[in-house]
Image (cartoon, rainbow, N blue to C red; front, side):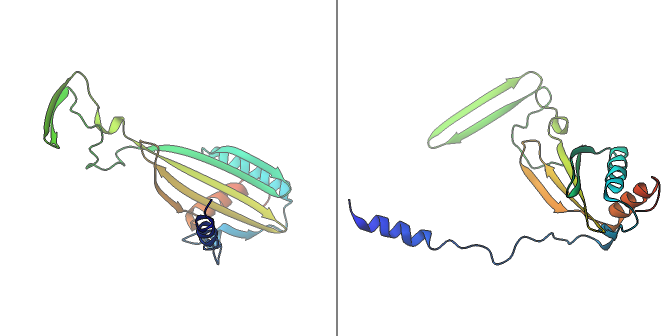
Length: 180
């Protein structure tokens, strides 16, 4: 065996490095997504968060008491989100005619029958995830949104910890007994 391929592989392995910083949410969470909870026990905050999130249509995925954490998600269909220029598998409602050529050949075809019905079969899905963490006397909320297109590919992902969402969640939690 020749030693130079092994030396080249060892040299390339040494080229890998770790990132200088960890990923950071962009945009950062809004100030309303962080508040003090000194007057209310963590288990009561968790109970109120579960009730508020379920009332808002979220499915609770995980809860823990140490650390005090709630994770929830919900999905919704986004009709017409896809690109109009996406020609993947596009046919008329009652069929289509296709002509194709290349590399010195020519082909054609006809599809007869009930074809695709446009955006009814190509709707994207929005996945919204929320986590609420009680650490000491602080409550932190993070929320992210992902849009998955009709083929199952990630089309968009972003942090969505906004003042409006966190403020609404906090008000819904206050509707329970006491003030978190």
